[in-house]
Every structure is written in structure tokens, then in C-alpha cells.
Image (cartoon, rainbow, N blue to C red; front, side, top):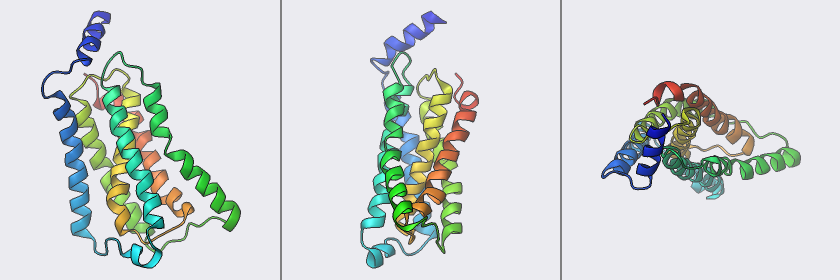
Length: 205
């Protein structure tokens, strides 16, 4: 087994032709599918910008796009045996820090802001698209040979949730960090937990 891992680690420094594309293609595919699907299913994209300005959408997209990119980068690292993964995991945790700070500030200053008339639509979008994007990340990871399957599954779950949030955010009229924590962050963390559980089964090679 050690010889196999040593061989894979050496190959990881110079990936075979097409491996990076086989990693990226399913992930780009689910991003496009989720964006197109929600665009066809819902009306009113960016309507909240006219009423509330760019602030709420900037916070949502700032978080989700950062998490999406960091999760994709972390999956690339996790797919290469022999590479240290601690910094990649710390990286995907980083976007949660400013969100937690904003949530604490809002809660102390104004009380929890969790009300929202479209919460059911938001939750449905997250629950529908997160697993689809998670599957795309799993398919991409199978182009590599991850050895820590639980970590890889967890990060794939974060990627899935980030894709879902990014796709739905332009259609979301709600604001408030309490709402974001309850109907975006918690589903993302739930998808990450599910990925942690399923990683050893789905990513075994």
C-alpha cells in the first residue's frame, strides 16, 4: 500500500493529460446546470437590488463565491495523495469567520433577524441544488485518488452548498444575517456533514 501511495504522490506532481479537465468538467457542469435551472424556474432575478441596493447580495455572493472557489481548490489538493491538506481545510473555514462576526453584531445590536416571507422557496432551492452540485464535486474528485475520504466528502458538501447559494442568491429578497445563518449556512453545513458521512462510500478507489 505504501508503494502505491508513493507512486500516486509522485504522479500528483505531474498529473496525466486530461485529469485536471476530468476534475473540473463535472463541477463546471453542475454550476451551469444550477444557474440555468433556477433561472428558468424563478422570476425576479436581482429585484432586491432595486429595493435594498447591492449590500445584501454582496454579502451573500461574497460568502458563497469565496466558499465555492476555496472548496474547489481544496478538493484539488485533497485529490493528490501526499500533499498536506490542513491549510486547504482552514481555507474553506475562513469565509465563515466574517459571517459569524456579522451575525453576532446584528444579534447584539438589533436582535435576531430571521423573518422572511420566501424562506420555504429558499430552503427548497438549497435542498434541491446542494446535492446536485455535491454529486458534481464527487464525480470530479473521482478523476484523482483522494486518501482522506471523509475530508474530501466534507469539502465536496461545502462546494455543493456554495453552488446552490450562489445560484439562488440573486432571486432572494430577504436580508439579515439571522436569515442567512438559518436558511443558507445551516443547509451548507448539513450538506458538508452528509458529505463527511458519505465520502468513504462514494470516493473509495
